Image 1 (tube, rainbow, N blue to C red):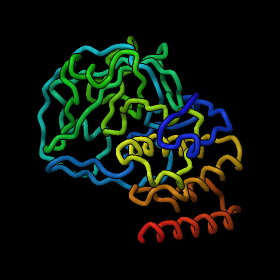
Image 2: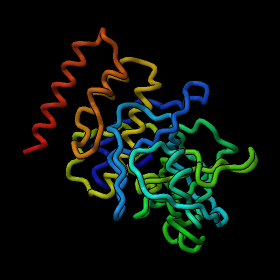
Image 3: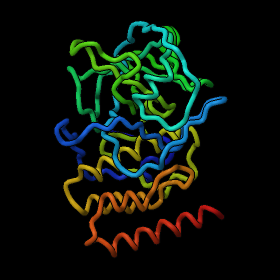
Image 4: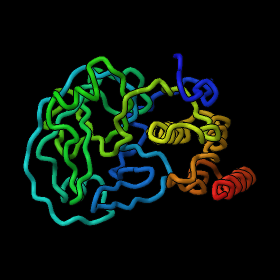
Length: 282
């Protein structure tokens, strides 16, 4: 795949084929992993730094094949409170009154534990000032302006709790609750690409933030399901240079994906990470 813009040929290296893990290889987690924090006017949800792969999230690149129907329902909206699991957020903070999403055909799957005929309904949401999630789009006309049929998208999503599938029929419905969870695919990456975080400092802020959200999850997937220690080591070495502004717990990531026998490697990588973070202060 040809990659264009932002010096893509320099910052990516492709030397392996990532294989999709099956649903039987992990235990579902209901926690929503957010790289930094979700913020809206009057609402701030604090989250823990990222420490490991989140098996509740779907991660793929796809093509817009159409649009969902308009989903509508009314739920009470209790006062906001911080620090809740995804299911509790949706249950207790209410649901959007209107939401329209995309029908997406998967073209490159990184992690899709369940899938029906290669399609998903993908519904994006925005966090409101009362800490409720509202549909980012309320009509097909509006969503089509940003995502035309035939266009490519990158998706980070969880199985829907807002408008959950009522049966096993039809495409599985997914919720996107962050701005980086549904973005136009700008050919900066693919399922196999490995991002050299050390070389991203000069890239455009908005696009690189979206890219980082996707690439971090790909690398955590590699650490969780990688077939060789050499692959995991290479991934950990690249993550040394993951931007300071993002909330990841690098020491915890190393502990989660190495053993006590790798004590020297842990020490060296943590030293490099601390040196990198010190340079970022200057």
